[in-house]
Length: 309
Ligand code: ADP
Ligand code: MG
Image 1: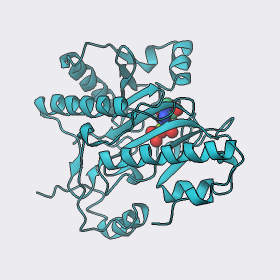
Image 2 (image 1 turned 180 degrees about the horizontal axis):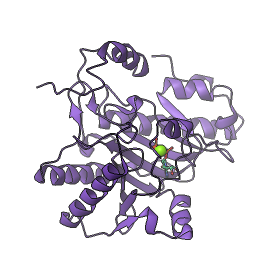
Image 3 (image 1 turned 135 degrees about the vertical axis):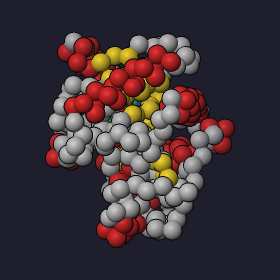
């Protein structure tokens, strides 16, 4: 059954061409195929740790019948209701241990800053897109975070998305990070379903997230990677584009890379499965490291530049 998702259905004529352009030619008749089986990922346990500082996989999820954070009628009450629901479900969840829910409003400035510096916590929303869309209206009233003891698995509530599911760890072992993400997400979805809640999803658009650029998997898999030579090389933007990767600074979206350290992650979200997107990152990062090593020796990299697909 094709479920309706305003505004994507009501404004279909407007959105179809936008989504086609935004998501690499994704057609109105295309179907999104998920794959959250981490065993299907090839390699990924061997991204050189002297280049790859940390590895992360995240996605966002919207709770059906709850207002999107940026719609005008998303009131403080809506945020509060989602916070209560998350706390209630968290109490019912025993996998793999009981972790407390930490509310942003109850943290000291120092605790908050430490979690941000360690890349475990969202920063205050400063992006003009987020501010202009009104998603920070009640900040920091109801955003919360849960994390596992080792902090490899985290859940954010009421940030840019209703829920963000994140797995992150120092070093380059994506083969360890990805299963945490897949298993944790499966557990959370089961828990929501057991209480008659579900995530917004449909076969054409996949998971429905706050931003149209995040439809589909909503997945961003990425690494913080040291590329002091390649990062300055003229072909770097072209190489990333052809590998279907994107770069940011390590402070997140809208930050600049410092000291040759970049965040590199998948550029696509829709029309590819979760496994395919993580594989793109694993394979692409290996090539970036090979290029960086060549440049360290003063050698040419022309033969390594991937062809336009
Ligand atoms: P998103 O599009 O996922 O919202 P942001 O750019 O807002 O991305 O980043 C969210 C947070 O995740 C930031 O604090 C960022 O530093 C952190 N992050 C992203 N990738 C990694 C990574 N590979 N290792 C550690 N932290 C990361
Ligand atoms: Mg963000």
